[in-house]
Amino acid sequence: MGEGIYFTLRKHLDQFPLGFPETSCGVEIEILKKLFTEEEARVATLLTPFPEDAGQISRRTGEKEEELAEKLESMSRKGLIFRLRRQGQTLYNAAPFMIGLYEYSVTRLDEELAQLYKRYYEIAYMEEMGASDVPGFKVLPIGEQLQENLVLFPFLDLREMVKSARIISVAECICRKEARLTGGGCEHPLETCLSFGAAAEYYIENGMGREISSLEAVAILEEADRSGLVHAGANTRHLSNICNCCPCCCASMKGITLKGYDRHRYLNALFEAVVDDERCIGCGSCMERCPVGAISCDEVAHVDRDKCLGCGLCAGVCDSAGIEIRIRDDREEPFDRMLSLGRAIIEGKAKNIGGKRNEPDPKTLME
Image (cartoon, rainbow, N blue to C red):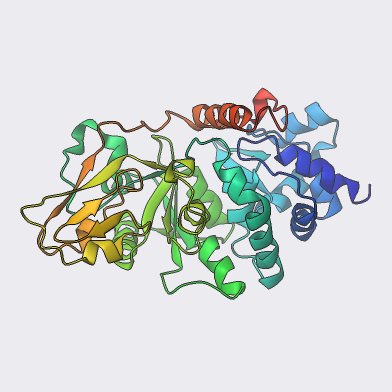
């Protein structure tokens, strides 16, 4: 089989909306070699993004079902493919690099792998994440300063969505863990990555995260808010995950804070901070708090709404109650499903890079 299977797997992963682009130095192949054996890489290329049981995959590929089932279960427990338990069936599907292989390696991460991830992000993946100009994540505030009645917008009420979740897990933030292993990092809390539903079950069963109650999840969000972290989840109405992001380590924010890219490439700002000039005392606390430098201050604070994430962190430190967090009138609504988001990302990439880097099969668009 040889190491050529890793190049085949790279092409396979590159068909996802957030792909796995090739580099001249081959760092992406080194990542795959670190994560997969040659046989695991071969099996991974047999899977689609749609859940199938071992029997279905066996019939489609000609693999022996019993041997295949054993390999699939082993790989899923290593975070190399996704596994779903549903109505007595065990289903498997391919995992993209992000959100997927990268996050699922949180308990396997060592200094060598962290260095490879850091290098790949700087060379290729920061650009890949923003290539479509379709933000993959949405930002949701939880602060008490939110001035909107969200009854008409239940998919924007983070606190209530968390309270109604069927099952929740929390894991360490892979981004901050990587940064600490590569000589950087920050002092923000580490155990802040929340998953819900099927994703939570996967994390819990694999020992990548621990099960928590909705009350503990809300407490984690509140602690993250106090620490200055931005609550960002997949840019869909469905709640599958919440990353509590710092501006110094997190993949979804570093393009904005370190490279000065437009926030829309990475994050969908559904809310905005609005200053009440009559109440603002010009103390500058909000300016220091803003994770993306969207606020300036003289006699009163001024918000650059093109930069503002609507995260609500500024309002949380305003003693004069001079900042309100409001839903943007010109907001871009989150996508109904991951399928729609994936299509938009692929179409955006095709438009912005002057043609498709790859020709994705429709099956690469995840439900």
